[in-house]
Image (cartoon, rainbow, N blue to C red; front, side):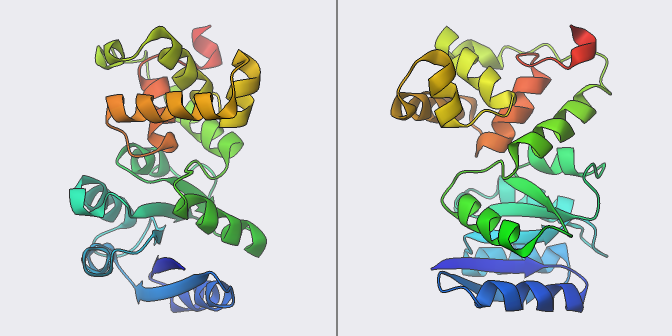
Length: 221
C-alpha cells in the first residue's frame, strides 16, 4: 500500500486528490495538511511514501518544507512531489535541488497523477523526464556558466557518461540502448553515481548534470 500525505492550503484541492487516490486499491491518503510546517511534522510522525506538496502555501511554504524533509536523514525514504500551477514555476528548480523527486502541474490528468505517485513510490523519480529536463535547462540558461566543481571526480568516466544521459532525460532502458549495455547494468551505474554524489534520486542527478556542465544548455554550445 502506497501511503500519501497531501499538503495544500486549498481544501477543495485536497478533497479532489484524496477522493482520486483513495479510490485506488494500492494507494491510501494518510493525512492532509495546509502548510509546510505541518507537512514536515506529519512526515516525521507518519513516514509517508509520497508527499504531494503545493509549492506555494502561507506560512512555511512547500519549498522550505521540502528542504526540511530532504535534510532529515530519517526521512530518506519519503519522496516529495511538488505541485505547481505553472510548468516553469520559479521555485521548482530549487525544490528539485533540495530534494524533491519531481513535480506535477495541478491540471495534470488524473491517470497521470496516479502513475506519478506509483513511479515515485518505487523510487523512480523524475516523473516527466521531458518536462523536468526542460525546466532544469530553462534555469540553467539563466546562469552565466556552470559552477566549477570537483564533485564529479568521484565518478568513473563511464559513470560521468551515464549521468550526462540521465541529465538529457533518458531512462535506464534508453541509456542501455544508447551505450549498448543491459538495462540492469545501466541501472547499476546510475545507482552507483547517485551514491557517490550523495543525491537522493534521478531528479537531483539531473540538477548535478547541469550545474557541473556535464549537460550544457544550447547557448553554451
